[in-house]
Amino acid sequence: MPVSSPILRVDGVTKRFPGVVALRDVSFDLRAGEVHALCGENGAGKSTLIKTISGVYPHGSYEGRLELEGSEAQWTGIHDAEQAGIAVIYQELAMVPEMTVAENIFLSNAPTRWGRIDWNRVYADTERLLKEYRLEVDPSAVVRDLGVGQQQLVEIVKALAKRSKILLLDEPTAALTESEVEILLGIVDGLRRRGLACLYISHKLGEVFRIADRITVLRDGQSVFTSDTAKTDRGEIIRHMVGREIKDFFPRRAPPVGEVLLQVKDLTVTDAGRQRPVLQNVSFELRAGEVLGIGGLMGSGRTELLMHLFGAFGQRAAGNVEMQGKPLAAGSPAEAIGRGLMLVSEDRKRYGLVLEQSVGFNLSLASLEKLSRRGLIDENAEFKRNGELFDSLGVKARGQDDIVGRLSGGNQQKVVLGKALMTEPSVVFLDEPTRGIDVGAKVDVYELVNRLTAAGKAVVLVSSELPELMGMSDRMVIFSEGRIGGVFGRAEATQEKLLTAAMAHHERTKQA
Image (cartoon, rainbow, N blue to C red; front, side, top):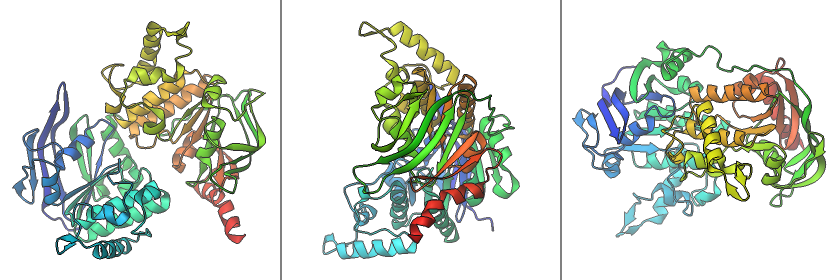
């Protein structure tokens, strides 16, 4: 691609907070018509850098210099950055759920006529924009009724409606299906051809190497590496991100399997809100020391299976479930925990953590009964046990009193895992345990899985990433439309076989 002059230059930017230097002498540039990927572990400074560029941290609150099209940017806030042509797409969506797609897209820049909003034009322009970017969404649809992936894509269109020059995308595909990822990457590629500059933050290195022209790596708040994508490789990027070489990205060490801990026979589950069963005739067993991978497309029943077995979803219409040879009713999470089963939810912020509370509060939250004597919490025992998990999991925080909502995504996930381990489970359900965390934190999670199975525990791993599923599972059960589409051993599994199994019942449904 022809080299153009930078539209944005970050020159020696340092950002300090009390007791912490979040950014230290960060420098890189962004060119028009370029997709520039920003990679780094959680806590490396990526979010702080984005907030600095977008005016959340105004001029004067940081050291160094930002330049836009050759002139110093001295923004006093977000509005100044937006007016200059900078738009940000955060992981946490910034739309009004009760408003329509069209109302959200033109929320701050609606066309007017005779001093009033021209609603006909608002909806006509929205329809044109949605068609332009190949999004099959009704402009009059209420945003809360859309899936998370559709909401993410609508938010991008909202940014583009403002005719932005620079688009900052923070983990834009974290909640998207494979088809939605294809649409988004197509949109980003189209924006590049139009001359828009995109700063693309992602932990998914496959996406980075597919879409980025250049890559910059942040580590511990510093910019440590920048390269044309064609001149580097995945191994080099990972090495700069974590400061060490990771030779075995999926370090599965399978111990000999033991007794059957969980057995599911002919399970059918219904949801009161749906006419058809959510799960049909599901059967499998799980042994001590084993990692059983659960795969399938979004909506195939993977999460519903885990939630039902944990006592938090659906009605059991047929079938039996046994835990260590004894029946496990579709009761409650408290009952499941008491029987030695624990779930780590895919949505750690909604179901896994109390974000306003401390690390220690969250670690012991599910185990207070075990830490209590005569109805009172043994605070010394709680602090000691929390400290053991805090240290063994390598949580990067100042201490147990740190507010968990202020930690990076990877460290929040470690706290969720620590809370699960505190219950001393024999079976652990991990639902998308590495979603939204960096490479180094992923390897830490994988090593924790090895520790669990080496200790005779069993793990059920749900993952949308096929390399992860194949790399960390001893056996795989692939779901399709709420039924089992295929079962595979580690040696025989290929991505093609797994995808074919995931589509098995989709094809039968179409034929019917």
